[in-house]
Image (tube, rainbow, N blue to C red; front, top):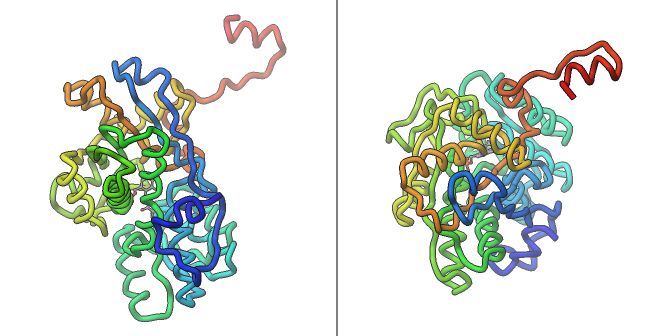
Length: 347
Ligand code: AN7
């Protein structure tokens, strides 16, 4: 069952909305086995969004945006992307027989995300410049030509993405104390906050979480309060200098009593490795940013040890093996037999 079937009554879906479904959503909320204990946190969970059909949380919003675009008669979808949005849009376009046009910043997106967009049949343009420039360009085109803009300024994306907040409450029985996630174009933090507020308003949750956003130090416009002309970070998914949902992110932060802070690339890569090696969860670099921030907040005594914390792992580590491989020992190259192998391994 996809998110439209599961949360239909909370979504802008009517009898005229075509059925679209890739069994997205319903991702596991994995209790921490080792990191929580090491930090002294009793209730730490990972919302593993990498298990969505295209490997990221984007599928939740895309399924709703695609259903609504089809309902409105659109057959050409367009987006700018740091990779995951384009993979997701291309998949749903392929599935529904629509055309997908993807504009990515040339040389700036992870290879596996690019391979997804191409395999799902999108027309991919690698545009020279930043993501922010690609986004501006696509926005301009969408204003001028009959194409549906599928970036997260499309409100139906936010509607779909809020279902992740519903799932967390449905799994835990109430909202947690902290929800931590990476912030790039800032649609997701906006969507989560909307979801928690809606569940709270209907009484399904008795409280609201504090929203904690993580940006990368070289791409931290919301933290510094100024757009970044040339954002730089190993976490290509959140290499964004002028977020479209800036206002949504600061509202989520301020209304919830949360924070948005920056972490370094070194912290991101080390959190990514620790997450994989000690929890068995391989997430892409952007997804490790909130975990890196959690380490810092715990160190600074800012997180109550009895609190329930959910760290959202927004994308699969398989999206960007190049980034991951920079931070681990390479395989042992060996030309030998069982005896030499045993010796090398010190068995
Ligand atoms: C894994 O795909 O912007 O703050 O074009 O891929 O809602 O933008 C991706 C963003 C976090 C940030 N984690 O979410 C795109 C794109 C992963 C991501 C984010 C992205 P937003």
